[in-house]
Image (cartoon, rainbow, N blue to C red; front, side, top):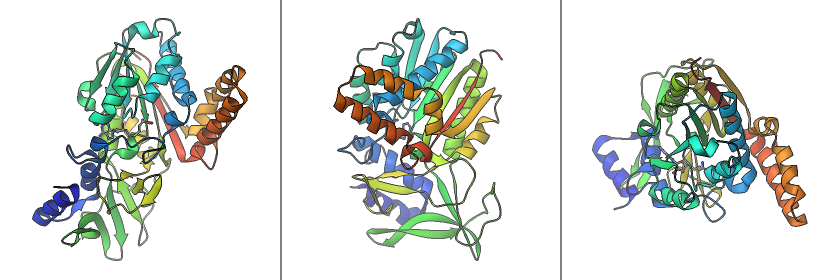
Length: 349
Ligand code: SAH
């Protein structure tokens, strides 16, 4: 059996499946899912992420969280929750950077939300020095009734989206069906018109919606509104509602077809930060800010940290630090495509 075979059987029996169902099966199927069967991150994998580029990224996020916690009056005990923690690099860098923040490690309890057994094992290895970490497969068991600080880097892009296309005959949902016995094909099916948050579409416009993402976002906002705390969500995406087909597949650092080799490629969609923000604002959020990764990292002082690191670095290490900064902040690199949504609530307010 393979994922392709399983998809063929499913489609044969019940008809084409939505893009969201397809993404969910390709990424998360308990036996054949992309994340379940491999560690895809890094040079030898399919894609690289900010924490794998430089320790500066995780250190800055750790210091931002510690600062939030201190401004909240150091509530104790408190939670630090990471969604989709990859190889555990980001959390390891955050914890190293906060080691000397008085009482932080004494009162923190860390929850890692991860569905991949392979990545969970990597995280456990990376974080074996700490005894305050627990693992959870879903948000349902991860959120504890204490002030909570949340981090998610490149997590929301892995969550499923449904796709709708506006045609001369009205709205159609884009689904994955069968072209032949062993070939998948994108198909358009009549559907109820989706509710559109933007101007009227023209023929060919594609609308993506991700109820899973907006539900998780609202649950996170609700939690910080109830117990205090804050969160930072970073991903590639757009900050205003827009039409566009953003579902993409990547293998070996190259784009590839989304329907070839199901379960063998990373399948993502750009994150609609406007929709995330609106979900968060349905709860009693005290502050929020949406900006580019560049603006966020610069505002919280990444350059000062980089200069401090350079003081004790060799010439080649200095060059590496500059290269990493360019990748994280560059307008044509991660600086502008990646967005950062921060939100939170003071305890009891
Ligand atoms: N944050 C990491 C990894 C990003 S890759 C980094 O920046 O390097 C996406 C991560 O989300 C992986 O750890 C993957 O296993 C996890 N993931 C994907 N879908 C998930 C889901 N539905 N629930 C929890 N984790 C998920």
